[in-house]
Image (cartoon, rainbow, N blue to C red):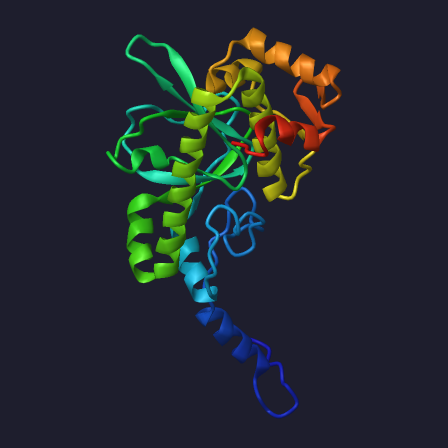
Length: 266
């Protein structure tokens, strides 16, 4: 027989507690870290920056799938795969790349914690790029059909997702501008400032950070050779604008770096 706890006024407290537990919403936790849900994730203001109440957040949490970690070099999806989901990077980093008909590859983007990846497949329901982990990484998968349905019920969710798509389009336009009109030095500096601001968004140091991508990746992304990337980093270090220790970068003179590119970044 269940022991009865009394509040002192004849009310069965244990029974009331059990009734509340039965009616309380079930929070969907990460299978790899049971302390994480959308409501308490440190990145929830970044990957889907929305002001939802508790019940609405629960509806979003219900459709999010927190998948197994990805090892370095493991694909999240490949070019021409059927589009099913978008993904929020929870930890680590990914790069996207495209292969031409001749098999030549070109890096098209880098994705850090709190950023959304996979939107290249929305238009045609086929991924235009491949995405691969640059280090041990984890993601939250959001099935797009379910996100669309939920967006119809929660207009604020739809509005903010459109904002994310708009920001991605703006980012692509900036990259095209940089590739078409910036000098090689301006491309490298703009890239470093862009990484700096993205790390700052997740509360990490904007002046000292680790580059998860190789110099070859950076060169492909910026339309430069590996040799040019290395030469420019060395030249910036000699000017004491930056300090380079393999993939560890310190920005020593932000004012000078911003002056090189007119304060714009990727």
